[in-house]
Length: 98
Image (cartoon, rainbow, N blue to C red; front, top):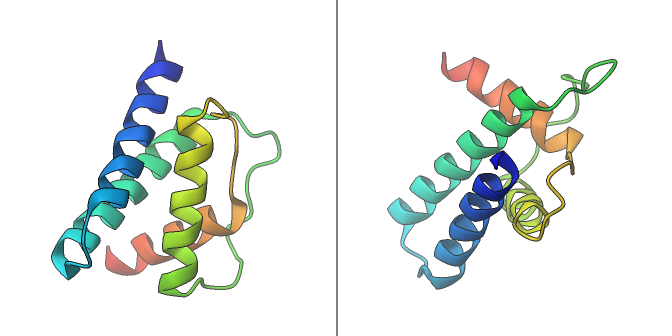
């Protein structure tokens, strides 16, 4: 059941991003929501040995591209896909905000 919910949420985020214009506020809201989705999913995956937390910082463009790619994988049923560099970047950025 969780797989269906995750795939549905990922598909909805992808559909929204594809339909959205270049509105800066909407893009920021989409990115924040997509990041929340990725971080929530990462909390539920059991990764033996953990994930690296110290990788290079991603540019804004790289971050959005990786979010879109990961969400597309999840929407298509590949819910165990993990992007280590994206995960490390999100954790680093979130800890700086806190």
